[in-house]
Length: 510
Image (cartoon, rainbow, N blue to C red; front, side):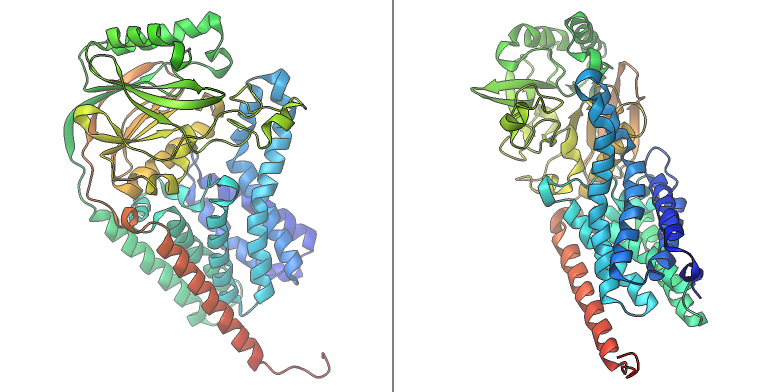
């Protein structure tokens, strides 16, 4: 018997919002994944208790709004860097972003309820539909897959499943292991109806743990990489009174002995445009003493500006260039920028109406003895599809970022967690240099081997692990998971319709 059926609808909405907030506690830095799982189990009886698809959609929207409001609470931080220009937008950003993303989940709840079916089948159908709308969330309007369900597993053995099915697949498995179970526990009176979902969940968990235990060991390469972290607060980063201090700090870290094989500076770490940065680049080359350096810098090409990464070879000469291609909406650019600029609305990281221009796409960068890197600038590490679109397999992933925009609470840690996921998915090490942290060396199993704490200035010299053999996921990508979910959705829908057609219609109710 489902106890929620007798509760007032307003109470069910309140409980759904609280469960959504609780579900997000599995995200970094809290990492309370058992609470996330319990929340997904408990949302099932609330969903089943809804009488119409509209009420189900509203319940799903409230649940998801609570989830995203908690998980993405860091989104207010960028608006507080320049309080006079942007602070007024902060509450609207959190409300509209959370509520907007929640529309995807509301659609899943409403569609699943519309199809109907037996309680456990409804739970399975809701799980599959939620997994499908998570795909949509990662692609529509350039995508925003932050706070995906799979992120709760980052620091657990279950994360190794990412190398098989990727983030959307692991998210789907998590939903299928929880929501149908909740539907069975609170609606099925027969023991077998409860045992089957429990047995399936336990079996899948055992297989995932067995797979994780048999993953190949991580091997060292013998090469040392220095990751620089200047810790420049965003409100001081471009201030002339402080910019020279931060640049000098990075030069000092670069010149330190002993010499590594590669030095990595974070995103936009040079306080000049590339076209006029030769004095800065010469100083970097001198401090590096023959060690290659990768660094972030802004550059202009006519009327277009780019957020870029360059490679300085042993002679201190530029020998590689990459332009960020997956830009942050309303951060690095604003849709219809010139029109919006008339109303005083600019991207927070740009001062012109159109903001930054997108680069040509994913590309490899030759960094000498270490091999070829796949460059990722900040936000690009969030998108697994960007890495899958690389023209060839890299020897390692290389992320430079300025997480000062994300504040000091959850944002930087969630960004780090997503970098760990990309490493597992590809079986490649990840080098991560962050302005304010967390800078880290991540091995192909997603483990952080060396790290520099958030808000600390300094550097780490870390050994680069060897790449592992290409993973299943790196070969097949997301398409098989998407096709499997679509097929499963169609089968569940067809089965439900067939069962409904066999139920005789009461002439009195007709």
